[in-house]
Each structure stands twice: as structure tokens, then as C-alpha cells.
Length: 209
Image 1 (spheres, one colour):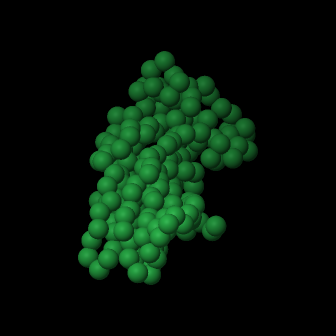
Image 2 (cartoon, helix red, strand yellow; image 1 turned 180 degrees about the horizontal axis):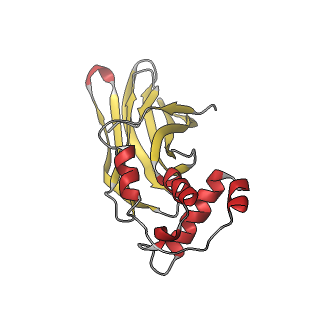
Image 3 (cartoon, rainbow, N blue to C red; image 1 turned 90 degrees about the vertical axis):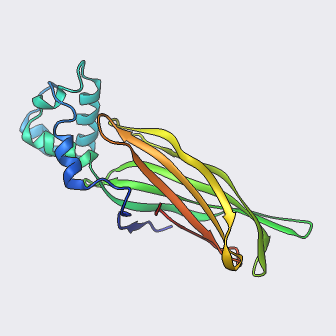
């Protein structure tokens, strides 16, 4: 399906300028030098990944960034600084009918994009919805809520809170889950999935906490 870029939700996204300022003091030191010609020909995202790997694998990562050229430092910051949230996947995963009970599995995956365009990390929620679509929803159960990252400077720290689903007004249900991510020496970030399941059985998810 076509990805949709959503504005960063307020309250759980660190201000990009503040983040970049602190990133300048995050990792300082010496890594291998690169010729301007070779660096200029390198794909920016691949360059950001390479520089981040070199910084994090240095004997003293906190002193690694001083050895970066201006171009490398800018690429490093753009590669690691959060920008927009992207909806990566939202779909019905499975449907089953069992003796007067209709159940299906649905879910969503969100991705945190960096300014450079790479994905810093992803988080998701999968739920089972049971009932009579168009009439009522009898039960909603969160089957899975989690996250992951392949970005060298970021880590996934697990569920920030216990995932929960509950009935609300008008025959609707709400499912909530939140995941914790962090970067070396920076404050932890909490990312959420809040979904509304309406009597028709439709699952409507946002990344708002």
C-alpha cells in the first residue's frame, strides 16, 4: 500500500533543533578520514549509516565526532535527527468465522523518519477484533505491541506501558500501546499507537499518545 507521511505528534517528539544541538555533543572523537571526492559520490543515507557505525564502534564513542569533517558531521546529524512519522503498514491480517462469532486480526506499523529520509525505528500494534460487524464489537484483544531499530545510535527499550484495550461509549473500543526508544546520552522517547475500533469493525489507528 502507499505510505502516508503524517505530521510529528506533539508531546512525544523532541524538537529537531534542540535534538540537533545536543547531537553535536553526543559523540565526539576520532574516526577515519575520507576524501572529499569519495564522500561526495556516496549516497547520503549510506554515508550517514557508515559514519554512525564508525562513531559507535570507536574505542571512545563520546569523543568520536571531533574527527568528522563538516560535511560528515552534517550528514551524521541529518541521519540521526527525527523528522516526520510515516504509516508503513495498516491492513487486515486475518479473518475467521467461528460459531456465531466473527473475529479478525488487524494492525498498524509506524516508522520514525530522520531528516535525511532514512527510517530511525518502527513500532506497531496487532489486535484481534471479535463481534458482529455492523452490530456490535464484543471483544478487542492486543496480540502484539513492539518496536525495533537498525540505526546504530538508537535502541529499542521495550514497552513503555502495558498494552491495553477497553470498551468506550457508543459501542466503540480503544486499544493503546506505547514503546520506548532512546539514543546514547539523550532522553528517552515514547512512541504510541492509539486505535479506535468502531461497531462496523473498522480499526482506525494514529501515532498519538
